[in-house]
Image 1 (cartoon, rainbow, N blue to C red):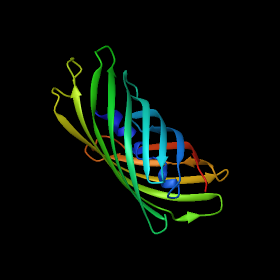
Image 2 (cartoon, helix red, strand yellow):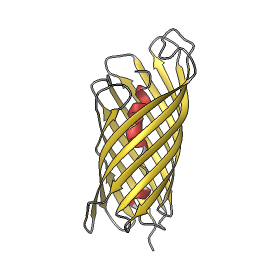
Image 3 (tube, one colour):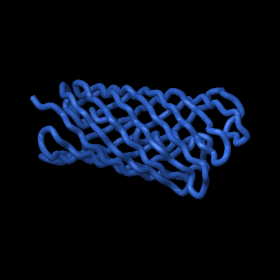
Image 4 (spheres, helix red, strand yellow):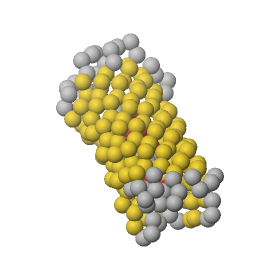
Length: 215
């Protein structure tokens, strides 16, 4: 379970907001998500800026814990994402790169620090759109390359070498238009750690507010 927090954070790290906007638009977004399984649960918040409906700059932070355990974690991340939109904005392929800092608090022992790069790739398709409602399912694959600095007896890792984490997720993204410039995003998500078969499926729900320019 040494990477339980980044596994929790991965599905919602991919949810930048430019995929919900037309090209050439600018936007500001904020969101909250909850994710949990038999072993983990956590909360995450985010702020983001979208540029020209293609680029995202964002910051995320969150906390999580292992169920029935004194072990908890907190983390924050910065990311840059690019959305390649095709077929008149109906499909979207997104590439994300970010940096994450994590602190694991293992009960009575000293904190464990971890940090590293995060890469994300996902594909969205707009399958339904009405005047005020859009449905965009999303398939995502995430990679994390963490360096763990651990010098205490509660050992998740006995060195500082890089280790991979890998996650796949499926989301149903709903966008409700309150006006031309104000939108609410709902994104129920299911995800799975691909490297550790002991970690169960994680279920999550996110809600966000998106403000964008109009032409």
